[in-house]
Length: 336
Image 1 (cartoon, rainbow, N blue to C red):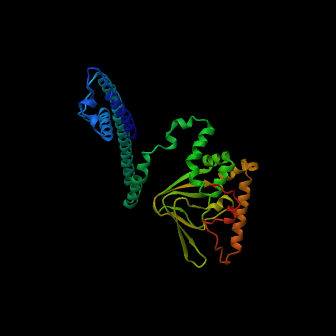
Image 2: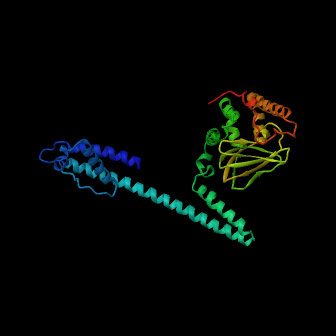
């Protein structure tokens, strides 16, 4: 739409410029329609209106009155034919693509429901599955995923890793360590995003982990809302909600960790998960280049132990999957 208005603006200016030319023996449209006596706004809007009608199926009472004006009109009509045809073909292609996606989804949805019914799945679970499919999966089918872009697979590895880095760095660089890692060693951050990062999708009510499970990943909330519940020593539950740009389970990156509470999705949510073993493998392969990782990891574990020792000795009141060690973050360089 904006491009059509820009083209129409220049064509309107051209149309008015031709109209004020003096052609011996011929009147101009400016003279015939008494545009000379009108103010500039009327002249401009009339010229713009004329140019728009040449690019679209509109109508206009202003007509060319001499040979140069007729030549310009013919040229603009040919241009309008090309522009309008391209617009129509683009809309048609988009509609056909949408119909194809919808038809494919409807077919798969029907197969899914038939399979669930034949296997004796309860109606309540069938409803949950189909609602999630309609609300989460169907909209994503209209988006272009990384795996759909075949040209990306043909890029040099370094260039492909740059693309993946920029796709994911905004999600995990809310944490100061990963932001500092990106600035100090871009290559390592590329490998973290390509090797250690995974996407986790949860529907409302899904459990991500439970109390006592062995932890394997640190998580970042990309969208939705998560609810964390931790059982305190006095047998009361401490609850907290986590939204976009929050992270949790950082401790698993630096030490063996067992989940200290339950985490479930409060709404349909998407998370980024950093696998601790793969992150450690990347860091070990670049050990000489990553003093920042060693320094921060040691400071985190040391700060975590100090928090426990300074607690009220009530079975680790400070231990939580939401644990953050500010003293370790203070060691990181400050980057905006």
